[in-house]
Each structure stands twice: as C-alpha cells, then as structure tokens.
Amino acid sequence: MTTKSTASRPVYQAACHCGTVRFTVRLTNGLNTVRRCNCSYCRMRGAVAVSANLAEIDILQGKDVLTLYQFNSNEAKHYFCSRCGIYTFHQRRSRPHEYGVNVACIEGMSPFDFAELPVYEGREHPKDRKDGSFLIAGWLRYQAEPDD
Image 1 (spheres, rainbow, N blue to C red):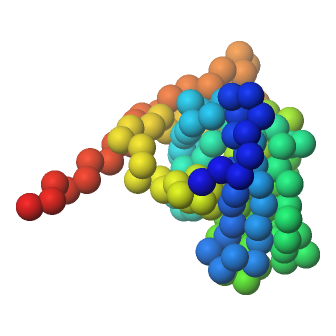
Image 2: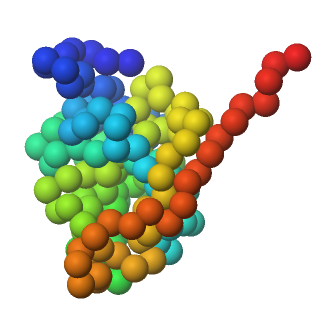
C-alpha cells in the first residue's frame, strides 16, 4: 500500500481505474479526515475523499490525460481521467490549499473499508455561510454481509 514513509505520514501509490493516471500522495491527517459531501456534484459522483496538501500529490504519469471539471463558482478544480472517467482528486473550494483525494484510487484502499463516515453539508457550502462553518448533514454507514 505504501512506498516510503516520512515520520508518521506514509506516501501512498494511487491510480485511476485504467492505470493511465498514476500518482503518489501523502495525506495531511491520515485516514482521520475521510468523508463524503452532499453537494450536487459529490452526491452524483459518490466518492469518499481524504485530504492532501497541494504539494503532496506527485503525478507520476498521465498528467496529459487528466481532465478538469468546474461548475458553479468555478473555484474547486475536479480532475478525472479522460480515458476511464474516474475522479482522482480535486482542489477544494473550502480549503484551496488542499486536495480531496478519491480513496478508491489509493492502492489497497476501498470506500468500503470505512464502517462509518461523515457526510458534509455541501448543498450550502461553508464559503456561502456567514460563519464559514462545516456542518455534518449525516453519516454514511457500511456493514458487510457476514460470511456463512
């Protein structure tokens, strides 16, 4: 799952579904900031994301096939592989110094590895609220069916 480690923050290998886009990522807070969002785009995309500082993603290959998608305020920058269509990461509107990284792209990880995670209220973005607060809209829970 990891290639090298610096102190307590390992560097993870990551890729899109077809493997054209490959990158490494060092997470800002490990797996402690795993989350989903219920804004119009995230609701349809359905990805579980973790956080990384902008300088802590290194695109190893496929930068030329990454496609940018922006909407509404055009502040957030959502990147996906133009070949297989998988969302890889996005520069956040709420924290422009961070990327949200698709957990499913990280080698050895799956969104189903997390029994419970918060769903952030994105329909009313923190930058659009007077106090700038992050609200939790609910919780997403996954319980695997027991093996018989």
